[in-house]
Length: 160
Image 1: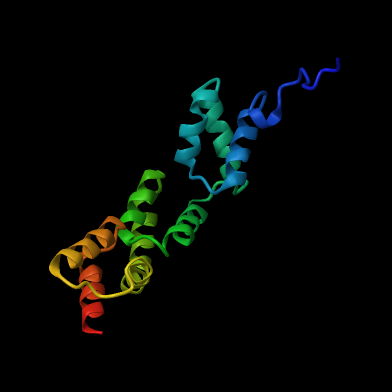
Image 2: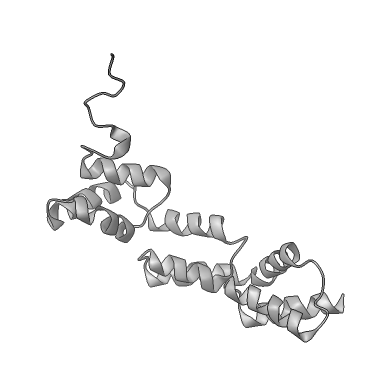
């Protein structure tokens, strides 16, 4: 009977990949910060020096870009989450505090509009009582929107 599997390890399974190959596979899926790649690749590196050398090389070739990571997160998350939640995600990626602060400042200008759109998709109509209003406010707060934006959205919905 013929054998259906080969003896060679599948590249898709991650066997035999070099450290640089693993890093490039991660970067092909989405943008990663240097700190994220460091965490993910540390277990596969023979030494910290080898890992640093690979990451330096990728950064020199502009495969790792802090600005692209920030833009990627903002593009993926801004329509659904507030500035506080996005700030937390950016900080978790190990980005420079200045880059995180700049991104959050840009997001704050559209916070009320984004919160209103999230509210509209979830609720669509003003709260009938204080309990429902509290539920709407907690929902927006859990999404990372600021208290001022939440108050403006929920109170404006009641005024309409």
